[in-house]
Length: 571
Image (cartoon, rainbow, N blue to C red; front, side, top):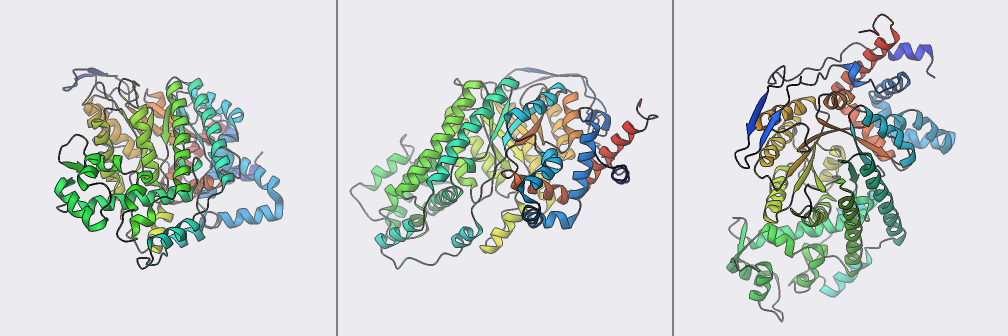
């Protein structure tokens, strides 16, 4: 129980919580029937008020007073730069002095208790039922995070020229530098069991349940980094073959480039090109190229490289191909479970050094499990981080792929969660930052992506496009509501869902849910020591978005004052 002095301190914050709403929205939803020109469907918008995101009573009605005091404490702690900037060091010091048991107990009473639902499925069940009772769904997320060590990352970024080595020597050096722990593989197999339980729990709670998966829990992060580099080098090879840069490689361009980079083998260049162009169109675009030259396919061409360059060095070894196939098998196991239970599976975005490999796996899963005729909705969602400069291009390419192969498309839109580490890694590697230069550019990318996908969602009755708007930005949510009205999107359908992290932006989630929109909380769980990277990122994010955190803290304090003041309880 917090002391009286602590309570007074928490309640002493200034009232800075008024959140402006967009002036572009009408005060009430208009009654309208919109005819979709492409599929002839009628969509009726309900005549309900726009969510009042300043309604703190509605936002926190499911919270106990004790939980509100904890929320106020956590938000205040996240606003202390020293604590946020030295959190890992302070945590290590606490474990050395107080021990793990006491330290974990402190975390459970503060950051862990506020931002995580519990340590296992049994402990999180009451939390999920409580959310469901107030019209908010749950996205279950096993929040353990994996990463490469900094020394391995530095080794990756400091390579030396190897063109003078013969192919056999280079491959031996390459193979000896890549060792993988089979204990890690066993751990990945155990993660599959955890995720399967997560998917089944999500299905049992709601017919439209979601579960979230991190691919770094299914495969060694070092392997994902290697696989991503192979995909990048394969794309660079396509760009080298595309001599006129028109997005297509013709038979003639293919023959010229192949003879430049590869030795002539037993097969003719025409035979090789026909594998890339089975329909004999005379040209190949990047979508077709990427399907025919996956990382596991690279050895069949790099064995003929005239020189040992980046592509040959990025080519997976036999051991790595075996591990990649095991990771894909885990992914398909989870996708099968999701399809069988009707649970939508959100594949989280991670650092850019892993993302190409993650995308490659997701596209493979989507093409199988999102097929029109096999499923009536997208089972597999990919995640797009809109603070990345290449997000619009990836989004359009992936949607084009869905159209070409006739499968439903599911996209989760986020702004991004690894800005500091992405910029640091780019600087260390002397590469341009992949992150937009300004926050305004990120906002524009996010809002434009919503607009693009909502337009696409109206173009086909059979092939669905669904969007999870995972954001704490009120202006982007208001923009999405405006666009839903503009395009006649029914708020009660899964075309657009809104998601916020557990412990953050309750004024958005609960007020959206009360107004009939598909609102969800991203509910992380896991052992305290496993989810610490997640918790530390939550603290940094709350510190970085000081204005939003201050506004939310103000709303929490206002609700506490209302509850503790008998004169205001009836308001």
